[in-house]
Image (cartoon, rainbow, N blue to C red; front, side, top):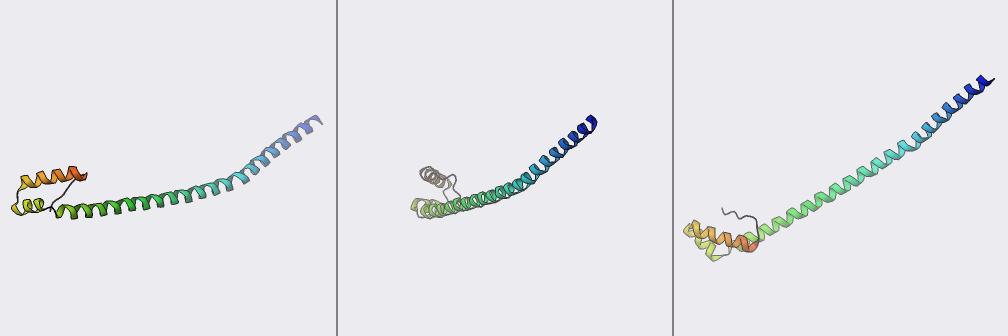
Length: 109
């Protein structure tokens, strides 16, 4: 009789352990799936915002480039140096304009 009770107790423990594993799995798997879906949506939203921010920065740089090119092209000393093909004067003027305007580089074509 003692052996039957031990055998039944072991079976009961195994059954309870399997039930706990099944219950935890039943609760955990959908939660992980739901969490990963929410996380993916959040990452997509953050990536979209990043792209929009980058697009705005590029548009701002384009507008600044157009503005600086318009301002630089109206400088009479610069026009004269270009017409006379005076590279030294052109370089001196452009260097001063670069420092004054704070641009990284100036390209003349």
